[in-house]
Image 1 (tube, each protein chain N blue to C red):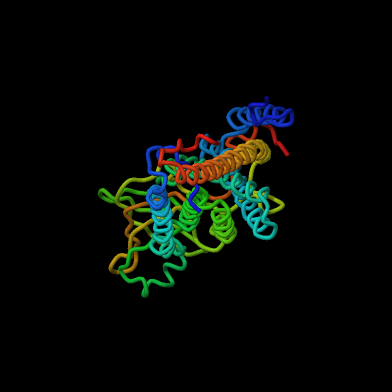
Image 2: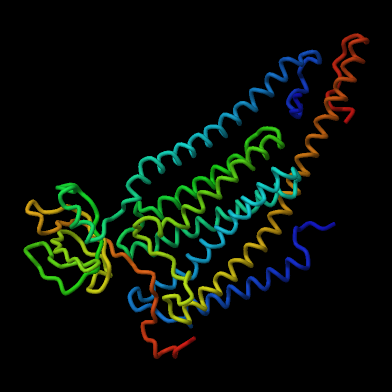
Length: 256
Length: 163
């Protein structure tokens, strides 16, 4: 019996991802140069920016899958939306933590309420709220429908976070890699791109596993439901049987 | 339909359906209340962020030229000013005096308090404080370094001129 959510494909993907992280560590910590202004602090960027970008992709997938669910109403879309939001929340938490660790020595403060940071905090709270909705103890179909609607909110929120540095004056710097001539050293750019690739691989690997675990969670939930219904039927049957007899206590659930 | 597993109800009267489902309902109500509480708490946090913070956040700072242009309107209100630290700094008592520039407009700053580690000429900074009574100087008590979106190698020679 297969007692893992792994398959040959995910094992290979996992190994490639691990190798990618080893390469990223080498480039981020050793091979890439220190920055002219920030010195060694620039190295935080190789985690901060990729986790942020992949978190955005993850929430984008949740939006698309929520639309998919609302149109098709199939479990597949629901599981994709749920799994992607969970991974997005974890990646966004990593973005916030690394950002604060960089902010203190660079800006002088861990946190400040500029537009980029405030909207990112909002996105994080939305992600936690979405995951809370996913655990509401109501009928699965109602919970799923509600989650799909809440999941759509990641769309506009994400857009505001992304363009906060363009629309308003923020302490957070603007995007670097949007022009054909990015204002970044070549090897730094390469390391950053490697970071994107490695965190994207991690996302795909986690998605496959999380999807499978959520699928199994649903099956367990269904099983408990079937069992409860069977118990109820047995109970009703024995109750009517004992009502015609002399009032002996029927053993509840004995027939299931 | 109440489909709560009946494990705890083994001793219940067989005809006490109303009671057992009420109990099941109460148990679910407790969990539901907690979940609703968490959702309300998170919504509250989101509302707080939106109303309290986003209002300030959209005008996080004014560039030096805009701060000079709007001097009359700003009066002695507290705000943040942004510009690049030009020239050098000098001590004035327990304060430090320096100049920032943005878009060709220079503003003298008199800063009291700590300076961030990266505070040095050529770096864009955001200073928090107000215009002096005569409007000639910006009196600041907090400086944040605003890092630009440019990243350059410290010792370009060390790694060669990578593409």
